[in-house]
Image (cartoon, rainbow, N blue to C red; front, top):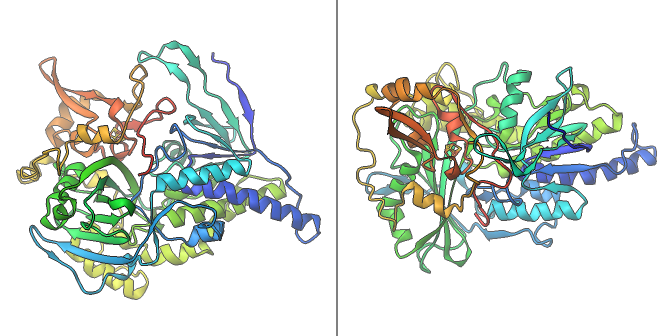
Length: 563
Ligand code: SF4
């Protein structure tokens, strides 16, 4: 029996992303306002006083595991900190020019009008990693405790399924599960309220949703994966402040996908490609889709003479409003991408994530002020969301992603009509709006033989293989630890999956973690867990749902500083 230290906090935020960092800062501010109003007799309830707020983060520093495009709508940060620019918020560039390209095999069509949801002039191109690092500093200045290298490994419950905190992961366990000399048991962080803002497909949120039935009556979540590189390009290739979004090449018309190219300062270009993880063809490889995207003449031209400097990949929740889980339970709230706050039509989620964290904070203040952090008070979080601009933004695009489940052409007509009617779905929508992505994957035998990526040279100049890209993601895990990728039945991999889907994990993982290697006279699964960039694609896209991503030892993973 391992003895664990217990640390009593009041509120614990899991994950140092934009939702939780904004939420923690807002909580501090709102408690002070609440106490003043109560003291002056202008508000009912008790004063709250000084409380202990903690943020646990699995990365080695705040921002280490944060990856996004990213163009930020400043609406939320302006509410959080009206003088965010004066306070040194590290925005990279102001968007000065928008473009939308429909890419054909070799050419492109640029409609004279950029679709309104993709208009970004005046918004900010940022490195979300840098911005979170800066928000983390602001939190520390405000007296909020930040614990980097502390992965939350388990939700703690009382006997009535009330969430009472989280247990952080043990350190110093070897690959056979034995304690090493440097063994340190994880600690139990006990809290009146735990806020899960772990990003897309949070590992604790997954457990919690199943245990408390938070997805009952909701539509299945659908995800996409974004694969991104930063490039330094010659001056003049792509102007700072220019934002381009693309549709078409290389995705087929049945696959949701699109690209982005953002011009940052110092001739750095953020370039990436999003592939919906509800694709049908198991031969699809999202990393190779991105590499192929870069071979398009119009895209390659931008990168000519440049060099790739950073790599990363991350999933995003694409389902939107209908796929939000119940956002609360006794002692717990869910925020940000973990709870599907992203606007898929605008490809934006930073502002909605931050606002969700801030509304969660207001809910917590009310609950603490009443001395009751059960669902009775925490359920007001959902009302606050539905009364805020989050609802005004997400409800009209509630059917956006579902329209793509019948292919690109019906989606384009449907989304145009949705735009005019504030989101009404039309007859050519699928009956079930969202089918979980892995359920849409078809057997490899039903797909035509294809040479999707035969023309991609992987020449390490314009296009890169996964192992080279992982090097640029600065990924590191101590190899003498148990794998954090739990494959529940490897016999399925060697038999049914090989036959039915040709082991799509080898393709959907953007970091070459999964390999089928010759062993015992057949091909068996090898898991190179130390390559993992924590994107969560395998947990989402595996057709048998037998891969469980759990937190590795704290500090392991990519280093997305500046991404
Ligand atoms: Fe992403 Fe899973 Fe591959 Fe890790 S192992 S990089 S989480 S797909």
